[in-house]
Amino acid sequence: DRRSLKQVCLEIWPAAEIVTGSDRDSGLAAALDHGDGIVVNAGSGSSVTGRRGDRIERAGGWGHILGDVGGGYFIFIQALRLVLREHDLHHSEMQFTAKILRALLLNNFDELVRWVQTADKMEIATLAPVVFEAATGGDARMMEIVEEGARVLCEYTEAVASRLHLLAPKVALIGGLFHRDSIYTHAFRRRLKKNLPDARVTIAERSPELGAAWLATEADDHAAFHPEASQGEIDNLAAALTEQHNPRSENLEKMSAQQLVEVFVAEEKFVQEALHAAAGELTKAIEVVAESLRNGGRLFYVGAGSSGRIGVLDASEIPPTFGAPHDLVQGVIAGGATALYRSAEGAEDQKSAGALALDERKIKGTDVLIGITASGRTPFVLGALDRAKLLGAKTILLTCNPAVAGIGDSGPLESPVPTTDVDLVITLAVGPELLTGSTRLKAGTATKVALNIISTGAMVALGKVRGNLMIDLHATSTKLRERAVRVLAELAQCDYQSARNLLEASDWNLRAALQKL
Image 1 (spheres, helix red, strand yellow):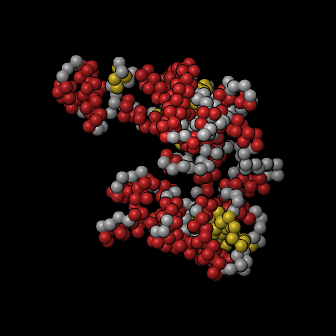
Image 2 (tube, helix red, strand yellow):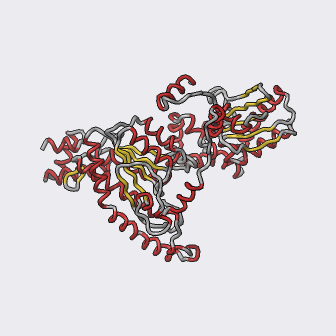
Image 3 (cartoon, helix red, strand yellow):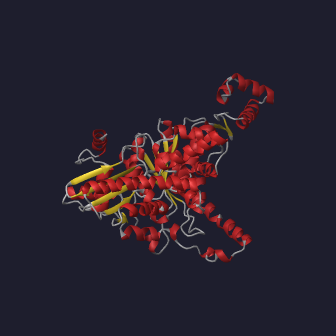
């Protein structure tokens, strides 16, 4: 694994000196620097690593198949097994089942079983918070699972302390389970105190990723490490138009329901105005996208949070609407598929993650990328735009912050904003949100309409529409088959049954049926 990782890194950074290690190494660096102590890591997996001087002792961390007891995968798998056991023994579904279905946006038990059979380790591990939520809410059997995970991690911690002869060790907790779920931290502290009463348990302030960066700076005397955003970056974000207060909504809590509706409806006029103002840029975007697709390229939408979800939504509608291949238009969201239905905090903060997402999709010079960021500053999006530009792809930035395009109103918004080098900037200046900074509102609406315009315009240019009718739609459901029949009947000037017979003879391929006329 380390050799493979090193080879991948060298392909990306050919001039860099690459040193590979494990998350144990980075965890020790993040939590202990050069000091002695024990690091207990509980994320998707788990491990316990201790150090005293030059001596290292380990426990756990054998992977999700052989161990990783106490990690997110273990926690959720135990809960799933309990759900299945109850179903098999009593043909009953626990209340916890409903929580799982809600978290996964699934509709029934059979869909859950199918999901588990295809889900990978990370997808399963990220659902551990559902178990903690149930335990916190009083579910005794879920609490037993939480206690079991904490018990094993405590046993490993005690074993490592014993082998290192540490009677009062510093025990640093790292990983998402400890940082996010206090019930797990309390369970671990309570159990450890019984057998290792003098241990000093703390939550590590730095993540293993920062530990890896710290190790790199230790190896390079000239390196500088700045894990936090600079004050300038923070000030720039605060100055964004999307972060300003809206004077029309300063007293929302005092409004009646009717007044709220009236304010929200009236605010939508700014969406229309922004779209009209950006008509020229939207026209250019259609031309750029159509040209790229015509030459064998693909369209990528890249965003985080609401912006990412809107991009994925538009991309997902292209195959059934226009009969396009599923990879022709792709949505890329920071945090991956899980971020579509659950907030993925911090996923948008790394430019390198955006670049890597494009590398995984083998972006090439004929492709076009639309980076969607209401503030114009989301690192994940800017990293993706930078990588796309480097590889020769066309790049478009869609933002709701005029300062990014250098067209801000008078005042602080006119201050220059460092941004990536792109071929086209589309600015949807919808103004401040009714809820300050909540860009799922006007910014989200304007973004959705803009993407609708761009993708539909490009598909029209590619000949996938006749009049205002979709002639390449995939008739994969009763509703879509009925629509295909109506389209064919109108274009062929024939009756309903004749159109249906022709479509059935063409295996419900609407374009093929039209070509037979």
